[in-house]
Length: 320
Image (cartoon, rainbow, N blue to C red; front, side, top):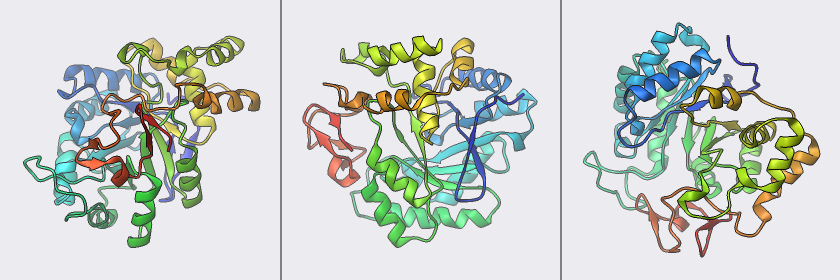
């Protein structure tokens, strides 16, 4: 039986479950672990699976869906276009469908705006295929029956503004890192105004061990709210994300945590305000992803932060 969670309407006319299972398990894809994680998730009531060509586990995801016994039409399936396939969008989608063993995906995302060559060499910023050109090719997929909705990932307000001015279809979704340390209020306001659903990857952040700095799951205010509601800090955080109108895609291989992550609680307006303000605490307003650099001239997949439209402060704190 599907879990009792809200779904959000997309501008394409379809609905997207507010909680999904993220399937990034490292560069090797996770092998059988990826399949078992998805299978367990579907058995526990998840009906939204988020994978990508770059996750190297589309085959395992497809097997889990078929073995679950859950009808395909009940599952919201997302996959993503890799950087080195921007010049062959239709072919890349078909490769993903073949690996998934599926006739269609519910949401197809441009994983990053940066384009690479087939042999993974970076194409300089502004050179063809640009993300606008890639998006135009993605728009053509909508008439094929192979995708129900198309969207983007890791897009800033600046990139979305260019995209919307030069193309026809407004993305149904934009998937970005988002959590109490990085609430992205400006991006959320913009996407709300344009009818774009925001999806949060890494909604539970990362353990503090990776950089020794504070993390929101150990924040005193989050712990207090969890205690009052008789729940976990993770459930508080995910429920905050859903209650503010964003989709969350946590990842876990632990059945107990999977069940907790899809159990939504009702937070008070005071709870929401407290969590909204956590990023204002010293040292808290920042990305929790390892690939960021403290250098302001650093590059992500060949682009500078300025080219990506991401605002950075010295020390690796993201402010936008």
